Amino acid sequence: MADPVVVAEGLHKSFGGVRALRGLDLSVPRGTVCGVLGPNGAGKTTAVRILATLADPDAGLARVAGYDVVREADEVRARIGLAGQYAAVDEKLTGRGNLRMFGRLSHLSRRAAHRRADELLERFGLRDAADRRVAGYSGGMRRRLDLVTSLILRPEVLFLDEPTTGLDPRGRGEIWDAVRELVADGTTVLLTTQYLEEADRLADDIAVVDRGKVIATGTPDGLKAAIGDRLDVVLEDPAALRPAAAVLHALAGNAPAATGAGRLSVALPAGGPRLAGVVRELDRAGVAAADVSLRRPTLDEVFLRLTGREEPVR
Amino acid sequence: MTAPTARACHRLRWTVADGLTLVGRELGRVRREPGELVAALVFPAVMVVLFGYVFGSAIGVPGGGDYREFLMPGLFSMVTFAAVTGVMVRVAADASRGVMDRFRSLPMSRAAVPFGHAGADLLTGLPALGIMAGAGLLAGWQPHRGALPAAGAFLLIVVLRYALSWVGVYVGLVVRNDQAADQLVPLFLPLTMLSNAFVPTGGMPAWLRFLADWNPVSALTAATRELFGNPGVPSGEVAWPLAHPVAAVLLWSAALPAVFVPLSVRTYRRRGR
Image (cartoon, rainbow over all chains, first blue to last red; front, top):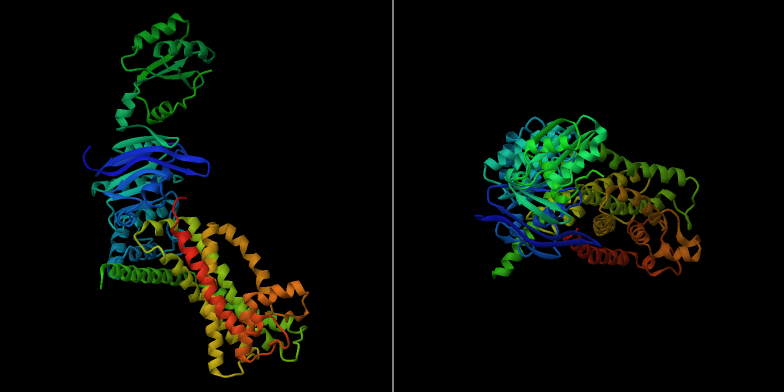
């Protein structure tokens, strides 16, 4: 992997008795988008806070843009942008006022700070709202301003901690568009999310995090391929769920998941049984199937599979 | 200049510059919310009327003298101590909203944020003090010992206010939650009342009197009464801070920052939440 710009090795972090990170490793090549995917409490935010110099790890190493996040924090800070789950802007100031203030605090000259503010407002569609107080912004606009604020210094690396959590679909789309634009500029983005669709759409590589560790990495397609295809079965009689599940379990070697009334879904191992064989086996067991289909798994299923949280039929 | 000195100068320059930017932020906020400013400025005038004419109608000053003359130094102390809660609430709001995290993620001076908050408080604090003095003059209060001691009294008020705002910075950083900070505000009220600001301490039970005499509110009130030449300067045997009120205020003004500046800066810098 050429030139990783974010590297984490064996990060550990505990809060009181809670172990948020237990040996997290991460490597993000320059100019790519890395999606850190995981449920609430997986340690995503803690990882970002350490990489963005807001928290120190208990153990482990992290380098961002070539600098150690603990010992060379100021060098790191000069090269990163951070946008969080909550919009970290001053609600009592206008959008323009915020950008100017943070520009000055980033040690731009007054003139440069003003010019940069105008540029960013224009480019990210906030010009019309620029002179209104942020308190009156919609959730999407607020988040966009937060994102834009993290771009003042043209960061090499941008950390986005669940940038769309709590936004409506429109707001989410606005943030996605903004991120795509940044990536086109060559910014490296590390994005945490609990939305699989978001990682699928934006990320070049995904790191799946669970309980403070990376449990899988790969491209969205690669992750989907690695766990094999999915077999969906719709039963004519929902009551036949149990015998059907037994048949599928025996065929696939995996416990199938109930995905609805009379619906089963199971991951097939690579080179596993073919469709015809599945139909025959179900027939032999006396289970009538209304529909049997084979498809690529969704990222949701990948995630549930990897974390072992798939709900088996009992 | 040697390299470390140059670096230290550079750092100091940015601490001041960043601190001033944050003071400017307060100005920007006030401009966007003139209502808040008006409320902050009307409040001192209301206090003069309320305490001066409502309480003043029933409270006598020992040793004679006009109650409103006695009252004004107490009211000055009261608005001065409001700096603690005002700063505390603003710092806690920053800390709870993530704005503080953005500050921390910038390559800016670690000391600038606490300094900026303490400095910003003076922006609203000084006009409020001016309005209160104006209202006091209208109500019949006046300094009797001339311009210089009066200026000295106001200077003491400002210096102690700045020192006190650091207590607010620290508590706000520790509380880190604006709602919790709001709930703490009423707890500071007894602190101002438990003093010589509104009534002389002479009539209080001994244990309460001890607390009131050593309360910095009392020291400031006694010092300004002395410098303004207002009634209520206690006679006879009194606690040390009331016998030497100016020295006591200066001591408080030095001691509070000596404790709370390092504590605040350390708390702000501490990472690892």
